[in-house]
Image (cartoon, rainbow, N blue to C red; front, top):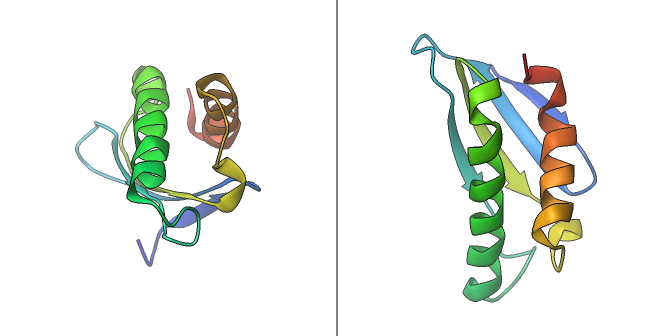
Length: 93
C-alpha cells in the first residue's frame, strides 16, 4: 500500500491501489485508540464489512484497507453506510 492512494474523511481513511484480479478486496483496521475494548472494535469491523459487502458490485479491481477513526464509535449501521458510501464514491462506477 506504500504506492497506493489515500482518501480520508473525519471517520474513515481508505488506502487503495488497483489490482489485476478484476475483483475488489478489502481489509479493515480498527486501532485500539478508537476503542479499547475488543467488543467495540469487532462491532465496528462487522459494520464496515456489512456496508462494503453492499457496494462491492459497484467496485472493480482495487485492493483497499479501510482504517476506522474515533468518530465512528457509537454510530448506527445506516450512519456507517452513509460514511462509507461517501468515502467510496470516487471509486464507484
